[in-house]
Image (cartoon, rainbow, N blue to C red; front, top):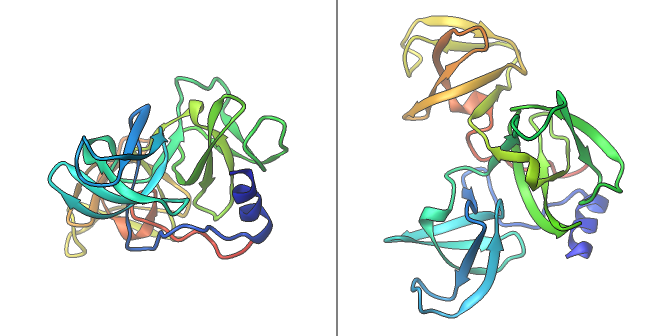
Length: 226
């Protein structure tokens, strides 16, 4: 396992079957059985842990056919998968304004950057270290590092990616512009409709924005190099 994350840091590559159009999610249960077939009596291949990112290949009733970042394929109960593979710093567990993101999975590794509370982070991998889940995460600027799984929660926020983003009165470009934002603005997602997100700005303004121009909702490709 340690050899795998060291390869990530040295080469800047994510050895996982994720793509921009992939259906991905995170394990939401404390533990989840990865089984050989879509049956509770089927042989258990592995036990997955909270925030393990999974690529969903197909669904069959209550079951989801998945592949882990380690390349292990099997079936899990779909109700224990989140719809998206994003987390954010849990404000109820962190007193500081920003949380350290480290070069490796543990507090002995140097801090590579700090992330503000509520900002979405794409989970790329998970390992167990120092008695905790550690998550390899990617932020909206393409930076990545490791963060403790004890200090995050599933994200309901997105960040604008364009220098100028239009937020409209309804879900579609035919609707008038309610307000505009610059790049890097945090918005809370209220609901979703046909690829558009109803969002709320910190000042209370609400409107609709295309999911394609924000980070934190649709799947993203990790950068190919440092």
